[in-house]
Length: 501
Ligand code: ZN
Image (cartoon, rainbow, N blue to C red):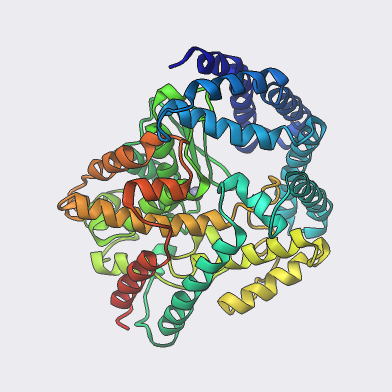
């Protein structure tokens, strides 16, 4: 590594350390902190993010970056050094446009918004959250204006989560996906063979669910020496280095699949972070590349592996040992069909593979309308319900199960949701390739062998850290563009068979 780039890296260590310290406080806020701590925590996080932002956007960073760019000129696009300078330049140019005061204000509004959202969801009281959402939306729109955009202000926000992807490209992929998913769902609802999941609503002691999720995480390759699992109202994964990657899940005694698939999903995110080379720690290249790629990992583990016949051929006997009573007499086939039951329902994180993306389409359209000023914050509950009627044919009974269900807006993240669908599409593309290159991949699942899949992902996805955008990574590793067809083929084949269409 060159001397200038090394100086730049060292200069920014403090920035990334402060950033990670903030992540610890965030994790604590969601997992441990009593509600009374919210106001003080908001100030602490605002201070940390302002300090981190100041270092990152300092003139010194700019000088060192310019020198490093001269030094890496001529190195290959995919080299660590050139990628380092390139990704840093992208973020530096963006972050320097945003005033530090706005960063602190945003951080404070997020912490307050999170506390208000938690209470509003508990009490089903949207008006309690409304002023916070207004504030967070205003800041997002301000940021979009500061950063600028060509087509839609939403582009500027989406770029934080999925760099260099345009709203119009997402809309085009979503249109293709809709054209395949809507008739599939209709066929299932109208003429699918009924699926019985009554046995999944019986009593599954939560302590045992906890133990089972830890067994599964361990066997997927999650290293408890470099991670831990806790409970959180809205499951998430976070990391403070490549050696401390934490997951959360939620427990419901009458819905064991919430914890099981929640843990596998977050475990998929965690395996990605744990697989990033440690040499990228404390630099801009640490962490998963984009949120779409992150979701490609979590959704692949959750669905393509975790909801497969092969996986449950191996796991059902283990699960039976944990819960002999409710699973008495339940066959492998009954179980497989039950965990893949398709049903339009209110909660996104618990949605099946066919309806999941319909939840995302609704959010994507509502967010664009909010950002464009076409939808007022006070009208969100009604607009939300109308979208659910349009896409899923159901109306949420209350806002807690409607527009208050997700944490994202409370965190001030607007423009994040589309990455779930992009990730779903990418997951099918990556999984297809892994399957083609690893003989007997799925047969292996049936014997409890999950490491070949992990190793393939490490070699083709994790190894790059944040060097590439999703489009670049897919081009390099698969020679493909992001496409809706592989996922549509997968989901159509799977559910045509399950529902005997
Ligand atoms: Zn996720």
